[in-house]
Image 1: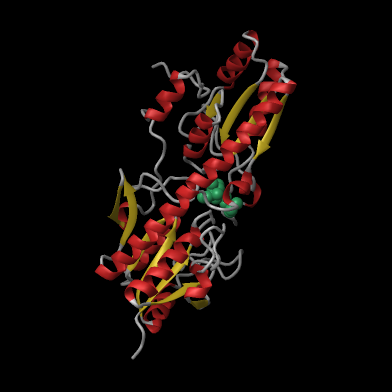
Image 2: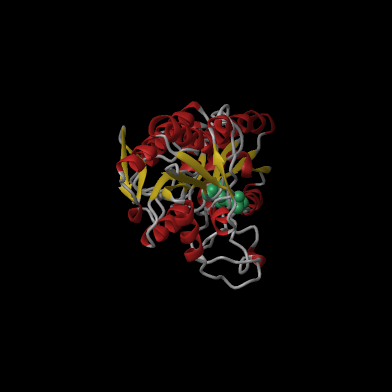
Length: 364
Ligand code: F6P
């Protein structure tokens, strides 16, 4: 008799905790439910190109603490808009993916990823695939879950960086700008900024005014604090301005990649205040390395819950954390949306109460 099977893929940008999910799914699928696990290589690319392998107990032993994903990922593969090469026109190959899903005899496909992955997963579910989603991203911007795994590890890296920049900023009486990832959501900047005691935190949700930032820097200088820390989200932009991309000129062909706004802000502060500024762009450091204990626990709980949904045949749902409860939410509630920092967030209020500026007048 053919063994019952479940598939798993990791999509979008990698982050710490992916391996913990692969381990949790594989161990509970085999140990609790007697299922075989098929891991697709490099996210949806593996489905499109029919690249996959069976994941056994030994394959996932010892990977709990490892960053990255042992089955690889891709943040550009999309069965509904597949480009054979970067200049090719997109083609819908989702029927081929569905054929592979049927031929392999999968009971379900566990899609571990962010909003892009959940959107593709949702579209596949409309074609008949049994999907279970697991929310991953350092950006923490998925709807319907209080937290995604990967966020805590990235927040830890960013906070440590801010701590280190504090001492050198103080010694040289400089303004240190630290740019963190997060795409169009400011969670990473906001939470690492609060944890690291940033003097100014710039979020995509609150367009900044350079004059306001300079006034904070000057005021601190007047009170003997001759240094400032400015935590900048890569998606931040000036009032009336737009976001800055690393690959603007190639953006028509490639996915647009945010990055570099902090250099523009640094130049503006230096010009207005004549105080030396230095920029640190943390980049992919925030996505590498071992997951924090919180992410290991979250990833393990999410993966076990995902297998529970497969066993109960509760498909086309994503596992989520709401309050302290692990829940299942319909994938369609998560597709094509981003969870941004609300302006009435208690985190913003707490930061304001301890004198942190958001580079804009928030008094009204
Ligand atoms: O979504 C995760 C993320 O790290 C974003 O914070 C960042 O903007 C983007 O991915 C970077 O993507 P890439 O790895 O393609 O440069």
